[in-house]
Image (cartoon, rainbow, N blue to C red; front, side, top):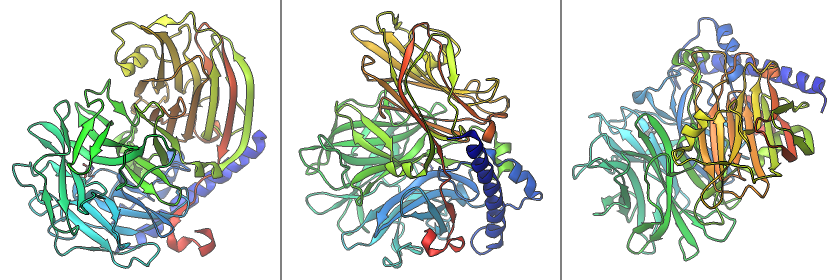
Amino acid sequence: MKRSSSSSSSLYHWVMVMVVAYTLINLVSGNDDEMIIVKYDDPTQVLLQQPYRTAFHFQPPQNWMNDPNGPMYYNGVYHFFYQHNPREAQFGSGNLSWGHAVSYNLVDWVYLEHALNPTDPFDINGCWSGSATILPDGTPAILYTGVDSQSREVQNLAIAKNPSDPYLREWIKSHHNPLMVPVDGIGTRFFRDPTTAWQGPDGKWRVIIGSEINGHGTALLYQSDDFVTWSKSPKPLHFSDATKMWECPDFYPVSVNGTNGLDTSVMDTNTKHVLKASINMDNYMRDSYVIGTYEPETDEFVVDVDFKDKSVDLRYDYGVFYASKTFYDSLKRRRVMWGWVLEADSKLDDINKGWAGLQSFPRSILLDESGKQLTQWPIREIESLRTEEVNIQNKEIEGGAEFEITGITASQADVEVSFHIPNLDDAELLLREWRDPEALCRIKNASAGGKIGPFGLMVLASDNLAEHADIFFRIYKGNDKHVVLMCSDQSRSSLREEVEKTTYGAFIDVDPSQNLSLRSLIDHSIIESFGGRGKTCITARAYPKVAVGNAARLYAFNYGTESIVISSLSAWSMKPAQLSPLHERTKSQI
Ligand code: DQQ
């Protein structure tokens, strides 16, 4: 692709983003009965701040968004709900409502009216996170946490008013609400986030609720015959004394040999189960998971390896990724995951920009063939956004070198690269004290030279490399095999001081004598990276001052002493996804 066409399409995109952003602000502001919206005195100020708004990641038109809620595929339409504060670009627990958007391809979205707002005594202080379950008669049902008039967390039910409305625009809260209240010593602020329910062989529904009991993160188990009357099982599904409060648990089957995802109630001898907990402990937010065997007759869940601590637990993503939720996509027979990607910009800048919070690009999720971990990959529909392409084959990068990958829009790109490491013999020894990969990535950042690595990609880089975010590998010699470290280093990602510039890292369980792959989705202020074909994922935020829009560059680099070969690299500019309210779309555009 030629630089001139990418520049003009990018310019067009920017103009469109600004026009749409301005129009949306006005449109939504005018819709008084729906939301109360912060008014901007000087809309140009808002528009000037938009370089960080994303082109193909889900964002609401404005204001604060956090957890993904109740994703589902129903009657030909994908539904996505999200925690939204319709009043401002900051978390406001009492205002939290369920934003709602629909899609036919999980890429382009139509914003609808909010599905749930805090209006009743059982949720007057916030409609918090929850999940959707499609009942056997085809009725979509939402179980969600309400913060009630006494500030207790309680579980509520809402049913789609008209299941034949393709967009399920109206939801009726059950007059039986609240269905579950904190009893038996459960803390009133430690009882939330119901999962998608599953049905056991006895026909009873089961659901788990996140909690902390006696200081231990716990998945409380509830059962019901009719989805309305729920009773607490004497034993939780699982708990861990290595963790505290479990938010947004998720529990679902994965196929041991197959490449399809499984519906939540499927369980047979070819399935294992995944239990994920979102743990916000010691100022660190992570989505950790365990894999185990679930016996539906007894509700026993026996884990292979239990939760321990943040440096050794299995995590969906070792970067900024929290409160995730999966759903079974019956159309494509896969399990799809969404996760909340937090901001790294200052609170004041969030307010000035008028928005905060992203969703990860949806990922399909499978059990790895080792059976010991999951793998994730952006859903293949993302490829419909790929446009100009560059390819590089068999290119050696000598130690200490970098080169620019030109020909694509580097601020809005999908990059897949596969590295060959010609000589593994001279790998440095992995020292015992380097147990925590994130700490190791901080000590050995991209500018600390090594032997095999650091090598990888420099993204959202400025012309003179004053700004760049780096995703790279280092190879070490461990006790009996090579160890591969993957880092996502933001330390030089912005000349703006107020921005958080966190460095993340994780080990990848791959054999580096085979090709080592890296894929990065770059979208203005987010970088989602997948190492070893999705065995290790790291999501990061970057807010460059200079490397924005057309000024952003992409490089491959190798600052180790040993040469590395790029066996293949493909990179694409990405078209923006379509995100707009229903009244702005014609039928053919939906
Ligand atoms: N966010 C929700 C809670 C959940 C937390 C409130 C996790 O339901 O525990 O917005 O981010």
